[in-house]
Image 1: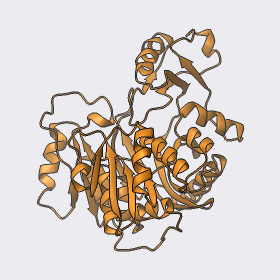
Image 2: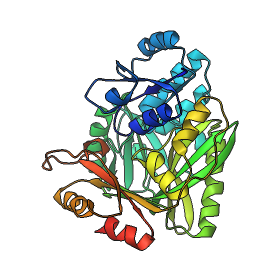
Image 3: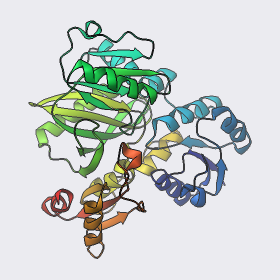
Image 4: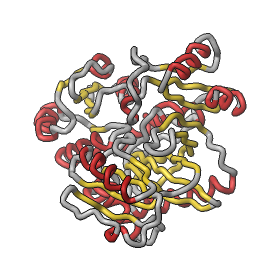
Length: 379
C-alpha cells in the first residue's frame, strides 16, 4: 500500500487523514502528542513536533511516501515544503513558500509586482519605534506578527501610544521577532479557495467571513456561497488569479483573504495551503460539490485535480463557540435537520477567547435556503 505523510493531527487536519484513507493510502501522521483526534485515526502516528523537520525527514526516507501534505496551517506548510523538496515530491518553489508564509515578504512581493497594497513597514525588537518612523501612515493601523496565523498577535490601533504597547505584545508571539505594521483596510471581509496545477488555477468558492472586529479580529463564522453579486464574483476570480500568478503558485490549494470597500477589492494575505476553520475541508464541498480534500491530495501526488461536482449544493456555514449563548444555539440545533457537524466543546466557558486557538468549539450548518442559514448564523 502506498503511504502518504500528513503533518498535523488536530481536529482541522483530521478530515485530510480520513480522506487519504478513503482514497486507499496508508497514513503516517506527525504531530506533537497532545491527545488530538489524528493520533487515533492515523494508521501510524509519530509523536514528533511539526517543527522538527530533520527528524521527520529521517523517518520519511524509510517510509518512502508518495506524497506529503497538510491543510490549514502555515507552520505545517513550511515543514511539508521542506520534506517535499528533500524527497523529490511536487511542491511550489522556495520563494513562493516564503512569500506565502511571511506577511512582510508577501507585501513586498505584491508591491513589486504592481499590485495595490496599503502602506506597510516591518519592525523588530531592536527597531526604533517612533512617530517619525511611520511618517505618512494613516491611522488606524494593523499590527501582525510576520509569521503567525489564526489571529495571533493581531491588533488594530488608533494612535501612537497604543501602537508602542501592542507592537511589543505582537513581537513576543512572532517566531522570528518581527511584526508588520500596515494601514487598516476598510470593508467587508472574504476569502477565496482555489486549486492550482501546472500553474493553472481553478477558483472553487468565495466565503463571507465574520469576525469579532476591533481590536483582534478573531473569526466568529464563515458562510458559503458569499453575498457577492455575479459581476463581483467574476472580478474576484480575476483578481485572485492575478495574485496567484504574482506569487508564482504552481501547484496545490491556496487561501486568499481580501476585503471589498466601495466596490474595490483589496488583498489582505494569501496562504499556499487550504484555508482553516473547516472552510476547505467542509464548506467548499457542502456549497459547491467540489471535493477539495481529494484535490489537495491529488496535487500533492503530482496529479491533475478531479473537478467533478458530486452531491447536492447547500447554503453552508460554520459558527464558532465563544460563550454560553453560542452553546445554547448549538443545543437548539441538535434535533434539527440543519446541523451537519459539531466539534468537541471545551468544558469551561469562562476563559477569554484571545485568538482562533482558544475558541471553545464550532458547529457546521447546511440549509436549503440562505434565509434559513443566516437566521442561525446571526441569532
